[in-house]
Length: 78
Image 1 (cartoon, rainbow, N blue to C red):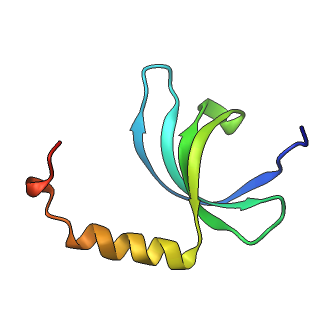
Image 2: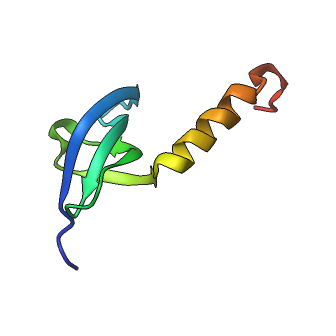
């Protein structure tokens, strides 16, 4: 399997931290020298290992933001 190259161009924030120090983060990441995209995933301390995540382009993050703003969290069935 080929190495995946990435560069975290901007750290946006941390959503949570697990008991072993891994953090679920939102970052702007350039994958394989491509234009950066919003990325949400778990990272080990030092960012040397990563978990599965989701990568969104500009249009997708705008749509996600719109959808989240319309949500009534009290009406969701948790």
